[in-house]
Image (cartoon, rainbow, N blue to C red):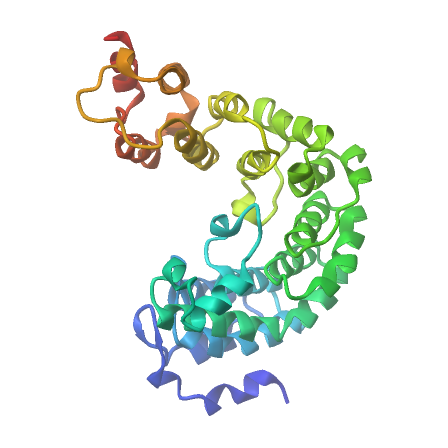
Length: 361
């Protein structure tokens, strides 16, 4: 007997997900166990849309968690890495909200109880739902810990990612740090960052590892200590880039996470981030731009303010973005979200308009 055998014991039709009644969730969960890849992928897509819709979670979400754990634990199931990532996402939502510092479980618990942290979550009912989901997922963290030694590298990587959001489970730190020597770079890097997010002490010796992805992860973890090696490594990722690294954090946006981690190093990192921004494109550029603009523009630029009237730091941003093509692009197309961010800051929303703003002085 498996947990999936209990699917019909739940009145799913009375529960809700993004599109109304959750009566279709049992079918989707059963289809995750299908030997047919297309069927599994279809079910995954539906579940991501239904119980985790653009970061929103629903009453059906915590009820689905035990079944997702059962599927992830079964070596005969395909796409277990994706199932584990779904478990991580229903736990924390968009991980960018919790990086680079980690998940604040005390804050969520306080909000669920109606405490001062309630303002962060908006309503007690929402906080209570999220807390119930976190508790539901926490009951399976021992499964994730066991999967850290799975033969499938994707499963090892996703299992480490799940464990990253449970600061109340520091007992998993040794196993995570043990993966620092994993032959797959993404697994090693993910495990190191995950260990740091739940309070683990990452060995500074990893900053000198021969593998650059391992040094990146150790630097993300240790930037807050002010270690010069960590700062130099993260700066190099922004200025020189690095090989693609399929880590789950920020959907693999390793340069953006490098930028976020640099802020924890203390001191004025504005110059480093602005220089890095000019070398980035797409979502990497967008994440770094948020930080640069927060430093330079505490308030949006008022309508009609000329370029010459801006403070020097703001003028530097305008100059940089007027000359850099990459941040305005996603692939080879214009990046609308970047333009929207500029507009919200009171700046021109296209590179051409930014250059015109600069030239008018």
